[in-house]
Amino acid sequence: MSQSSATGVSPVSTPLSPDSSYDAPAHHPRRWWLLAIVALAQLTVVLDGTIVNIALPHAQGDLGMSDGDRTWVVTLYALVFGALLLLGGRIADYWGRKRSFIVGMAGFAVASALGGMAQSTGELLAARGLQGLFAALLAPASLALLTVNFPGGKDRIKAFSVYGAIAGGGAAVGLVLGGVLTEYASWRWCLLVNVPIAIVAIAAAVPIITESKAHGNTRYDVPGAILVALGLGSLVFGFAQAENGWSAWQVLVFIPLGVVLLALFVLVESRSNHPLLPLRILADKVRGGAFITGTLTGAALLGGLLFLTFHLQIVLGFSPLESGLASLPMTAMIMVGATVLSKFLPRVGVRLPMTVGPVVVAAGLLYLSRITVGGSYAVEVLPGLLLMGLGLAMIFVPLQNVALAGIDAHDAGAASAAVTAVQQIGGSIGSAVFTVLYTSAVAASLAGGDGTPVAQLQAFVDGYQAAFFWAAVGVFLAAPVSYFMVRPKASDLLGSEPAMHLG
Image 1: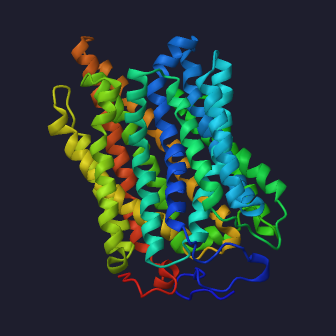
Image 2: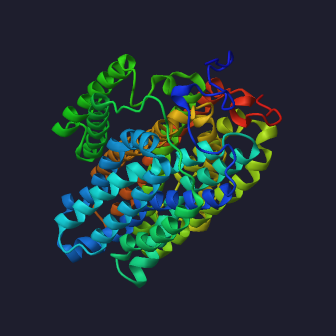
Image 3: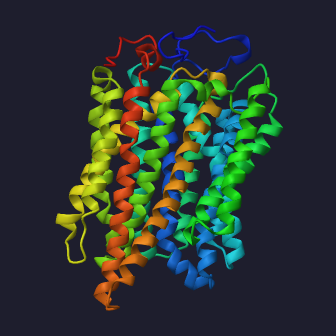
């Protein structure tokens, strides 16, 4: 198959070889309804990462959980989700994307119902693990459906703009919804709410979504699946344990183990004739730049939201609902920014927003790093949130498009899983690194304080400032990555449509 001499990415309009054929229509007759269904599923997966955080204190009291068990409610979901994403992507390719979407959505709903009805810590943890398992099937199937049903043109930009806006704003929506359900209903509804959403999504998906799957060589790469699952799982677990200190034995064992297992995975994939993740997906410079940008942005976004929630509730005294509502301006800015940018993207290209976006996000985080104990939300928080929302829109609107440009339909699920995996790993790494930096700053502040309640609050704020500052540094690094690496051809992004400006 011919490749672009400029980027090495195969244009989406290039004819497929017999081994990489697929049976989805080039232009789905109801593709905008399909987008709505996929967006609903994506929102469910994204907000579930934060909606449970609001409910955790209430669930802990109700079920008698220890602090360690409470941490595992969050960690277990991320662990299973991250470890099985690539396998879930290949299952979607080979078994069928529509079938995988429906089974993933149904399984996620059942797991959510089990968690909402849990009567013990063990039952809740088991349900969270099941949620991660089915999310690992649902997320790549959803993105793969967009990839094959919006193969090119300006419709593709619009579709990925919606998807990117949800990816960026869904976490904040989860905070709001979690606050509402916890305050006015029960923490259990933070899980049970997924059931009616899933019923609506499945009922709409059955008549609207057309099945698509890869043909040709569809044998599963079992050694690769085992290595990548263990490798990603080890990395996520190791970084999650870093909150106990970088010298904790779990960190010293599982992070290096994850790196070794992933190195072995790359070796196996390079020699396999039916790889779980074809290395050509990662080898392209443009796509690699998008993956690095997604990793750094995911780390900064999760770190920013995590410590922002702490500051709003602990220092400013907001209720869970109020803290959730306080994060809405960022979500609103993402939505507005995504709508505007999707109209101008064909003219301005992708490199400019993906270069400027990280700088704007970094500016927002730097603004938040100047918070004080006696400061107000309107003066010290809101401007930073608006800047972050604008910058995230500039990143997420083109990111999915660039990361999946030129992907053969045969590999749509695998590539979609890789996109989600790098953001998931980035979030796990960011959460761990910023937590350690926060803890160190708090300890140093307490050591020099006088032990009064005001000094305690000042120590917390010093920790938040450190986390925001280093999150800004991390996301800023995505700017030069995007500038030097993200230079796709117009045909890769728009197919046969008029050329996009890429300068």
